[in-house]
Amino acid sequence: MFLRPEFVAPRLRGSFGREYHWAEETPSTMRLLPPDAGHGAVAVAEHQTEGRGRLGRVWVDEAGTGLALSVALHPPPPVARWPELTLVAGRAVAAAIGDRATIKPPNDVLVEGRKAAGILAEASERVVLGIGVNVGAAPWPGAGFVDADRLELLVGILAELEIGYDAWLRDR
Image 1 (cartoon, rainbow, N blue to C red):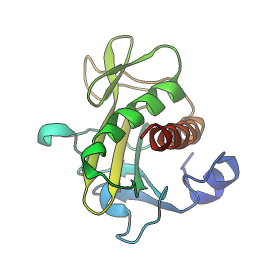
Image 2: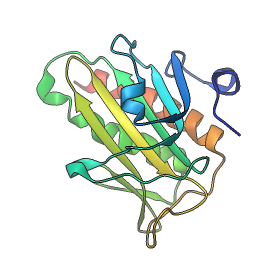
Image 3: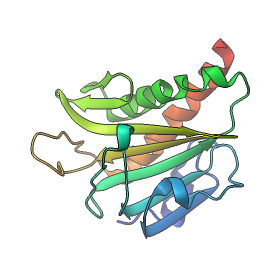
C-alpha cells in the first residue's frame, strides 16, 4: 500500500506529519520538503533515486519495501545543540521498531546487529532529518530489515520523534 496522505493522516497521533508531502518517486525526500515547510512537516516517497547517508554513502531502497522520509524541524538556538537531534531521531526509530532495535551512534539503528535504518540530518535555518528504514527485506547482503507494516512504522516513528523532540526541548 502506498503511504498516501489520505491513508496516513487518520492514523497520526500527534502534530508531526500533519503537513504531509508525498511522491511515488523522488530523487530525495529531503528535496521533496518545500523551503517553507513548517515544523513537523513530513515528506515521504515510495522510492528515492538519490538517497544518501553520512559521508556521501548511497542509501539503497526498493520501491514499496523501504520507508524513506524526511522531517522538518525548527529548533531554537543554540545551533551547537542541533546535532543532538540525530540521536533523538535514532531513539525514535528504535522505539518504533521495538525491543529488538539498538542504536549504533551516531546515526544507525540495528536489528539483530545489522543496520536496518539510518538517519541523516542537514541543518541550515532549520534541521531536516532524513530517515531510511529497510522494511520487509534487506537491500544488500548483510543488511538488516524490519518486519513491520510500513504505515504503522511511519506513524510510530513520527509519534516517537515528536515525544523525543519535546523531551529534548525540555532538557535544554
